[in-house]
Amino acid sequence: MKETTILFIICFLFSIISIGYQLEINDAERIIDVSGRNVKHFTTFQISRNGDTSFTLSYHNEPNFLSVRDENGNDLTVKSKQNDRGYFEYDVTLPKRDEVEIETVAVFAKQLTPFPEKIPQGYQQMVLYGENTYICSGYEMGSQKTIISGAAYFQDFSRLEPTMMEEDAVVYGPYYDVGKYSFSELHLHFVTIAPFISVRKLVKEIEVSHWGNVAVEQHFELFHDGAELDGGFSRIDYMHGKIGNSVRELTEVLPQYSTDVYYRDDIGNISSSHVSTYDDNFVKFEFLPRFILFGGWKTIYYEGYNLDASKYIAVNNGKYILDIPYSTQFEEDIVIEELEVRIILPEGVTDVEITTPDNLKEVGKKNRVTYLDTTGREVFIYTASNLVGENNSNIQVSYNLSTLLLFKEPFLLVGGYFAMFLILIVYFRLDFSLHPTVKSKSNIKASKLVSQILNEYQSLSNAFSNTNKPNKNLDLAFTKANKSFTLYSNKLSNFDRAAGITCSNFINEVNELRILFKKKTDPVIIDDKISLLDKTAQVLKDQFN
Image (cartoon, rainbow, N blue to C red):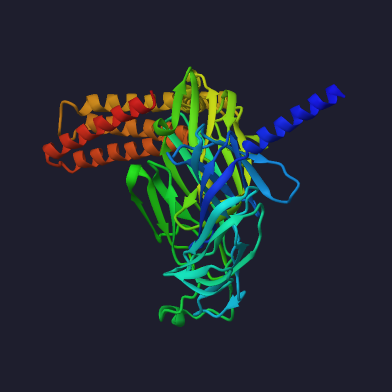
């Protein structure tokens, strides 16, 4: 009996302690921004810790992005928490202070539903939005208030008093002494001018080169998932201002120091784009799709840019570390439904370690062979889904790479050209004819016959070298030489037709000299002719030597 009494007292004391340490929310204010495609909740909690070290955030829908900070701007640790109540809950580690103020940012994609679902070309787009009027929480709250802003015009909204319109916002509350998981349906019907663009699929390739460049290429499939266009499209009406919910221009924020931006589709280059640099060397890429996008329409294109490797690759303890955004970001609220990231590392890397955000899942890796590769490059593939712009954090890839491998491709290139020229040299030096021996004998005989013709010309040249007048001895020398020329020239044509023609032309020149002697031509002309014949004879001698 005494032991039972002691056990009861201990349990009673523990229950008192646990009750005394229950966390309390003194006040909460939630601002819901519906100005974009995604709905953003900015919530501030005034908390009395009462000894608790963690705080549980609760949501009816799973946020696509969630961040928590204290009043000093310090990020707090957030971990997903399992529960059986159908809520999405997260544990937040609180600072060790009695009174704590935390600020949460939660982004929800595809919470706005077009209504009506189809609109004519000139009509504004209206959407429906549903939410809990109370801030979802597993704690009792002393007071809370919700402000909804960002709509172009509120057509209708639910009321839970006190509810009022303040300028362009709807204010619910303040409500006092709100119980745990209190619920009251909230619905809004309002006009929005936000572009309803989703990226059905984005394939991003990041190719690393240690020759100073990181090349990025992104393939997009954009879809306008707002209210569909009812009826046909009229260019004339569009030019007169009936643009409806169409999207004409988008702005993408590229990483710092992006250069050499290109923008293309299957047809070819798209010239309707503009690139500019702003704060911290970020690059603003403003572009027009090839055609206007109305509800239900889509476009497919790809873009690319280069990054300075020295800005994105660091060296730590002998390992290279690539630190680069894994997704992309637009100035407009855009949802990326499916993302595939391909990281292509240089050939020969080892000890690869990749640190990714929690929403990236590894699919596997494959090998890709590109220019001058021998074994190929490793390609690591990751996927993610339902991303918003706030999700665009960095992915880190660390690896080892031998410096000697950097020179492999230049050596392959130089060696390839050297081998090619060497083969060409050998090819032109070798004789690939079917009968090389017969051809060689023919060349020898042809050379001998040409030599005999030139010898006869030399004898003839000695005969008229000391005279420039015709005489009997000179005429006999011409007659004898002409017979020899004719004989040798006919034989030469049988072995080498080209050589025979060349020598025949030479013999004709000699006969022209004989005619000049007979006609008693001016000695100066005869001397010029003899000089020309001597030069031709020397050319023949050099050619057939």
